[in-house]
Amino acid sequence: MSDKKLAIIATKGTLDWAYPPFILASTAAALDYEVQIFFTFYGLQLLKKKLSLQVSPLGNPGMPMPMGMDKWFPVLGTAIPGMQSIMTMMMKNKMKAKGVATVAELRDLCNEAEVQMIACQMTVDLFDMQHNEFIDGIDYGGAATFFEFAGEADITLYI
Image (cartoon, rainbow, N blue to C red; front, side, top):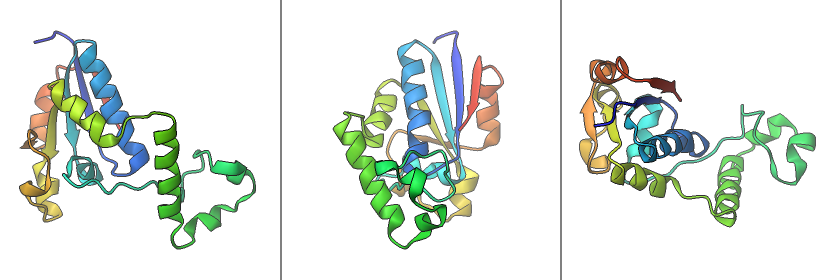
């Protein structure tokens, strides 16, 4: 066991918010940190066997848009039906072209690096989710489980 610990709370379930917890966790594990990620509320989407993550440009003014759209395309236009799917496809294509690992690849890397991934059981129950919807190798627990680890962590991040 390492003497350095990183605790992460993952609460978001979109494509763009899936990357930070897995990138930070896998990097910390490579640097010999003991790492735990607590997935709660919408963050549980990141643990599902079937990932169907999307990116939403709506309400995300910091998102750089293709073709300079962030300069001329009205924010309201991002609410047009189908825009989320289009933006998700464009983001995935850009990531692939730049050689960015997929969320599933990063998640597998975390698994291989023995990052402990905990699904919030209260949220699983709240949303009527079933354990068989989630990938193998994860744990289930509540906030108290996370606090045991986070209370001794050198770094705790809320993402």
